[in-house]
Amino acid sequence: MNTGNTGNTDDADDMSDISGEVAFDGEELGLDLLEEELRRAAAILDPVPPELRQIAVEAFALHDLDARIAELTFDSVVDALPVRGATDMPRMLTFHAGGVTVDVELTAQGLMGQVLPPQTAGIEVLSGPQAGWALETDPMGRFTYGEPPAGPFALRLRTGEGVLVTDWLTA
Image (cartoon, rainbow, N blue to C red; front, side):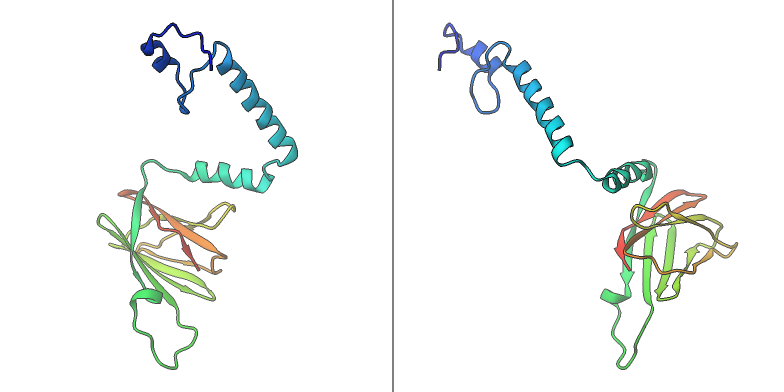
């Protein structure tokens, strides 16, 4: 391949791409045009579904840089000993972040829980692409939600200590 290089290896190193080949003048412009054409073709032939685009937008909007992740420290499905003959047992979850603990009981009727130490807090039940359901705790830190989350869910808590977001779990 004749690159027009005069033998100066420093020039060749500056103009090399990832494959190690030396780029011609104007080749970068050609690659940019090719990329743009491929993007247009993909948008026409295989467009991003509107639902997926909405999920992506909402996921970005839900991103909170100040939020602390509340770590799952207990899950009765994994950590508890099974009880013989027991059916339809509630799933018990415990999350910790800093000095805040969130206990959650998940049943077929919905979820209920408590923020410890007891305090008022705003809670959102996040579930897929839908907007989160807003809840408020009582002065004892208790909250209830009358529907079980459908599919993956997380909780976002706004407490006096800041914003906490739990891990995503499947109900």
